[in-house]
Image (tube, rainbow, N blue to C red; front, side):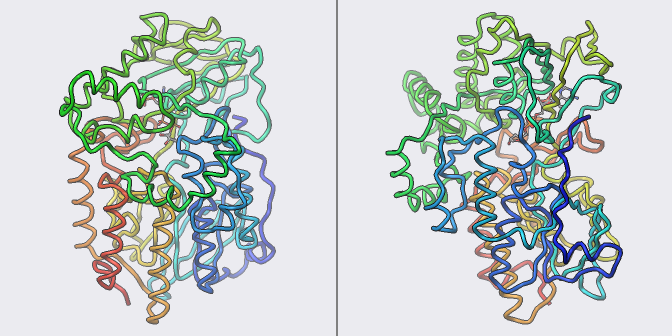
Length: 555
Ligand code: NA7
């Protein structure tokens, strides 16, 4: 597949010298130069620590570096998404759209890297293959795919929750003679769809964004849908100069509002329950939310629509009617309406004219539950029903979520304990930031961490600030080893699972539940998120710190 971006080695001279030689020693190693790795580097450098970031890509940006597929953009309001910690950056950066497209977000992150002079401590084009803790020396040693080795007291993973792309398990993928791409490994060169026969497999958030864009120019687009998702309108718009001024003047309020809301979005759940209001008032409220930008319909809705089945059914029915009204052919509309889960119980893709795409003559929907794909052929895709010919196949088939990027590194704790094995039945963590048996390992945006269900930079800043405070405390007290206790880990894991049971998310298969049909061992539901909300999570983290890092053995 022509999916891997061209690698331009950009390793620093210092790190390059370590290839085949004695490992370079740092105070901390960070894996990943996305939003969390960049900010963590900045904070630790300010503590006076020596830090090296290893990044698989050729540039900064993580998610926004890799996901260059057509139509990729925020579902968070741009002005609520950027880093909040630097007035200089906030003042200097102008978002052009309320929901910025990927190229703009990547430019923003490059601008941050320049402003903070981050690149000098990042080794690019270098994927960490293994990390092992040497108990005697109290050091993490890492090996990379380029042969570099390095060691550090602390290992901080900033690998992202959706960064391990997965291809479908289908025979013949390598035999296809046309071009094929995974949305999460999109090439850096432009891809021309004009007049081409294009297939998209997958209808999650990435598939929906891709489909609505490709449908504008493709000669013919065939969408291969296994399960439909409930989508809602994005209502994006350009930011006017007046709005720009207002945004810049109100960052404090914007971030304060985010801090108070469950997922750190500007949308706060309505304090009412769905059944407390009349059917007319309910319908009017749903209509209002459906007409507003962003995730309001999902997370700014009645407070019980994601936890109470009857409440959820009213919203689900409303959205189903919207889909029927927007898609002309009732049989196609029916295929686009999920029957096995309610609205919002899986990640809601936000869309712009997505449903109208299926009214176009150049677009066809193939329901894989009726006619499954049998194989990829030299010329296209064979389903149980027929052979399709394509010039381009796009795999929008998602990621091995949250734990997947960590699973791809051979992480070994004390006594050679493998993280992959420890988490084989589901992750066990303390605060989603640590796991017993792996001293001095800190997992930013790890499983069971509120950052996995969040307007993510808001939670990233919390994660990084907390970790930085921990390392500063350790330095000030002359401590060198930090590890979650088994008891604390057991209690946190039980707390995460108990909270999850109250939510409808946990009754449905999705990446929230660690389900990925293309990855062995990921067919059993295990809740990967933290559903207590960012404010409660923050409070718990702060309590732990205030109680001298309760539940954490410091030595
Ligand atoms: P998702 O949301 O995991 O979606 C993946 C899609 O690919 C989904 O529709 C899957 O269908 C489909 N899929 C996966 N494997 C196959 C096979 N083998 N055959 C057919 N269809 C398949 O990933 P996205 O990249 O869209 O979004 C991930 C997150 O990134 C998103 O939630 C945002 O937070 C950003 P299924 O539902 O499993 O039947």
